Every structure is written in structure tokens, then in C-alpha cells.
Amino acid sequence: MAENKMGVMPVPKLLFQMSLPAICSMLLQALYNVVDSIFVSRLGEDALAAVTLVNPMQMLLISVGVGTGVGLNSLISRRLGEKRFGEADSAATHGILIIFFNSLVFFLIGFFTSRPFYRWYSDDPGLVDMAVSYSQIVLCISVFLFAQTTFEKILQGTGNMIMPMISNMAGCIVNIILDPILIFGMFGMPRLGVSGAAVATVIGQAVGALTVTLYVFFKKLDVKISFKGFRFSWTTIKDIYVVALPGMIMQAIPSFVSIFLNQILISFSVTAVSVWGVYFRLQSFAFMPVFGVTQGAMPIMGYNYGARNRLRLMKALKLTVTACGTIMLAALIIFQLFPEQLLAVFDASESMIQMGVMAMRLLSICFVPAAVGITLSTLFQALGHGIYSMLMTLIRQFFGILPVAFLLSRVIGVTGVWASYPIAEVLGLATATFFFIRVYRKEIKGMPDGNL
Image 1 (cartoon, rainbow, N blue to C red):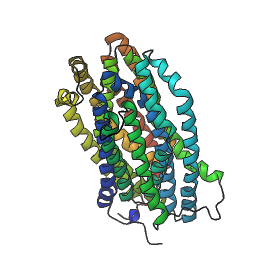
Image 2: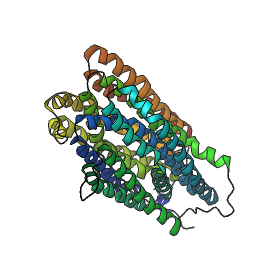
Image 3: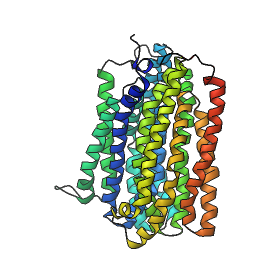
Image 4: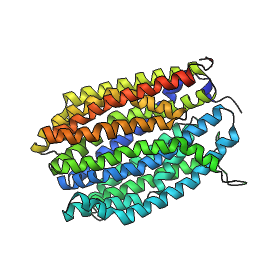
């Protein structure tokens, strides 16, 4: 096979080429999240709070899909760098089986646990009914999300970033178009309210999944997915989940933290939950481009680690830190200067704006240290050390955000919840730095320099 571009193309050009499609895709995803919430906010503050309460379950769903995909991405890119092409093919084929298993698990979760879960938050029947209807739709029909994320990560592991972008964009555009139609009952469609937003989400995921699935099965790729002569391998599953499981846990932890944060916030008011929901969606405009850069960087790092090329690996790391830091600094400035204008987009009440301005300014302090932490976490995953990424998140979330938010909320009120994030991010960055020094000394420092 011809040499993969991840081993020969100049690193700055390669990172730009690999990251730009992912950044565009992530920004559109962020736009969808915000537009979705803007439409829902027109139904009232309770509707926005209901969708916010569903966030932890959606985050858990996405964490399993993306975490599994990251495990596949890391394994495929490393095997391609090592020229072990048959093992790369086997990993991609095993991904198909994982899609259906994950879908079944979340169907059962959505069907049986949604109502008891939201009753734990509130005894308001209207709020609970809206949360349950939204949650059951997105959880029980999750097969499209899993198919889309799995195939996108397989392609990214081979260096193909364009098709995942097209798939994501197709799904998001359909979602954005359908949101007002299904929520408000336009063009003869029934008015579905909050449920309409969930139906639009699932249809968008189906379009994205169909787009990328057709490409994977009908185009010639660096990996081949085929069940002809296929033999199930527990070794391959283990190799996938060595990175995937810590990645899933790492991404699921914020979901569990959000469950308890929502419980703390709702004890103050529904407005506090709504403020958190608005921030969560707005901050995606900062974090999604960063995730786009790291999506482009991960296969580059994994490939050159597998190819034992230290110079290209470290060059990719330095450029990624610089790019992510710049994005987050720009976002920090916007959140500090224009919090009231950002909140006004969501038809915020006077009390919501009063609480939200302080929240936006405090929460956004975490942006710049988060950029470095996310980049180092990506490096650990690319090198097959997903456990370090998981430990970083555990320390940051469970020893940082939750206890600090709980204690400070008792001392200074709801402001203490917002202040917990920058405090926890500094703790996470210190942990990431410790792990990086360890990995660099043991595995990277002694690698051959290679060629840039």
C-alpha cells in the first residue's frame, strides 16, 4: 500500500487538513444544539429546564458512542502505522457488532428507567412528562447515533476527515430544518412541542448514519469491513476497549456530575437549571472547535506513535495545544464581555439574566486550562493510554467539581456551583501535566526522531 499521508505530509498542513472538516462539523453541531434550545425556550422556561434535565442521559448516550469510536480510531490508526492491515480491518468489522449491542442496551434504559429517573428530580407532572417523552425517543432509537459515530471514527482513523464532516453536516442541517416544523406544528405537521425536538434529532441522526454507512460500504478504504471469513476475536474487543472503556467512562463522568449538579441547582430554582442549560449549549461553540482540532490530531499522533516517529508526534502535539489554546482564549473574551447579549438570545427573563451574567463569567474562566487538558487527554488516547484520560476526568469531576460545588453552594449559594468549574479545571490540568511527564519520559523521549 502507498504510504499514508499521516506519515509523510508536513505536520502543520496535515493538522489543518485533518482538523478543518472536523471543526466545521463540530461548529454545525454546536449551532444545532443552540438553535434547538432557542426553539424549545419559546415553549417556556419549564420546557427549557426539562430538556436540560435530559442532558445527562444524552451525554451518557453520546459518551458510549463516541468512546467506542475513539477506541476504534486509536486502534485502527496505530495498526495502520505499524503496517498491520489485517488487524485494522478486523477492528473495523468488530465495530458493526458493537453498534447493535449498544443500541439494545440504551433501548432498555430508555424504556424502563426514564420516568423514575425524572421523578427523582421533580414532582411537577408537566416537567416530568416533557423530560420523559424527549428522553425515551432519543434513547430508544439510538441505533442511528451509534452507527454514525462508529463509522465516522473508523474513517477518521484512516485519515479521512471529509466524509465524517459531510455526514455530520447532513444530519445537523436536517435536524435544524425539522426542529421548528415538528415543535410548533408547521406546514400541516402536528404540534409536538418538546417531543418534536427529539423526533427531529433522531431523524437527523438517521440521515447522518445513512450518509456515512453508504460511503463505508461502497467506497474503497484503507480498511475493509467484511464478514466473509470473519472470526470474532476477544483480543480485538479488548484492544478496542483498552482505549474505548476509559474514554467512555471519561465522557460519561460529566453526565453523572450533571445529574447531581441539576439536583443542586433545582434546589435553588428552575431558573438556575435553565441558566446551566443555556451555558452548556453556548460553551459548545468554544469546546466543539477544540474537539474538532483534537479529532484531527488523534489519528496523526496515533499513526506516528505506531510508526515510531518522535518529531512528527511532538510537532502535532505542540500545534494542537497552540490551536486549542487560541480558540479557548477567544471564547473566554466573548463570554466575559457579552454575557447578557448571549443570554438574551434564549428569551431570558430578567431574573435569568441577573443570575446568568455571573454564571457565564465564572464558568468561562475554565476555558484556557481546559484547552491544554483536552489536548493532553487526546495524546494519551492516541498512544493507547485511555486510562490516564479517564483518571484525569475522575480527579477533575469527582474530586473537583462535585465536592466544591456542593460545599460552596452551601456557603455562597448558587454562585458556588459556577465557581467550582475553574477550580476543578486547574486540578485537572495539574493531573494531566503529571501524566504527560510520565508518558514522555517512559515512551516518547527514547523514540527515534524520524523525519518531519
